[in-house]
Image 1 (cartoon, rainbow, N blue to C red):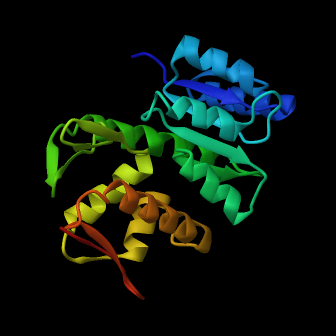
Image 2 (cartoon, rainbow, N blue to C red; image 1 turned 45 degrees about the horizontal axis):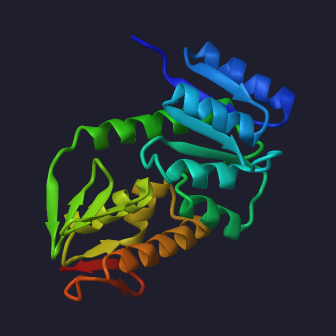
Length: 226
């Protein structure tokens, strides 16, 4: 069985080597890059299974790199490594298509668990194949697509996960904490702010069907009405 390929972009040389050695000791295949341009070149050549990107890098920062990748690749998991802890930075990262966010300092065990969780999520998505009717739209969880007639709209991984959960509980209130725990891993303040941003994005992408609404049920959660 071939090894999981990880593209690691980290400009702190010592830290990057430690992470690389630790991951390789767990049978991952790791390509280490020290700046964003080098990471972009290697991404195009190797097509990794997972991207682990430092946010603050020379030549091209992690946010810019992720945004560029997501224009053509909505699937490959992206995990940010960062010392930034501001809510706005976390929200920005998820908004650009990141799947997870690991704050420095961190343990290797934590990073490995998060990598495996994203690989499992991707496996599940790729093994789901059905289009789901949603008003005038069709939704494909595996392909992370919303389709309105012949117009396709790509969703980020979290947008797709969030819409899928809301659909599974259509016309019922979906508990806010349940969504946060299932998708973000915890229901803390930062994750809650991030989820609110994703709800707003989904509302905009569903706005061409007036019969579809995502209602905020204060104190409880959200309700997808369709």
